[in-house]
Length: 231
Image (cartoon, rainbow, N blue to C red; front, top):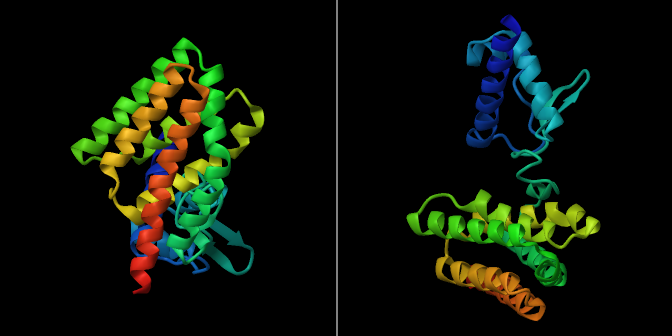
């Protein structure tokens, strides 16, 4: 029983510690308070702190340097920033470059999905499209479901190399959501639906074109934001 409780405490502290890093905020390269200070701050034991730090280190948030202390290497976990793009300061330019890369690969992924998606796959894509739309329209956070939608399309390509490119798509969706703050609600819903319908029809060219349209809307928004910042 003790082990279970300790595990729960460690998990809870991990969440609190990540929130502390993000809200304080502690910048990349900044040193975390020592183990004793963290235990005092969060009202827990040093062993629990040690476990939480170890877990965040395994997720790419912290780095423990022997003799120096514990340092922040990313404000988000690998799930949210698998390519470690948070270290770049110019987020708009980075978002633009991500879309340039996505335009190189994601329309072809959608085209492959249109060819290879099974009936079960199509039902799942439709479900995810509906859920993203519902969350978007209700003003709730749609980002994780949006990522699931794009990941499912990538999975339906049935290409093992594409599977390795999914972290790029994940990073791009997070990045775009963070810099645009729901500015393309109508366009996102319409183009998601167009991609979904094309894949459902096994329309290879249609899926490719719909994905180009989806990404182009997003890319144009980033360009407008960059140009607006330069005026």
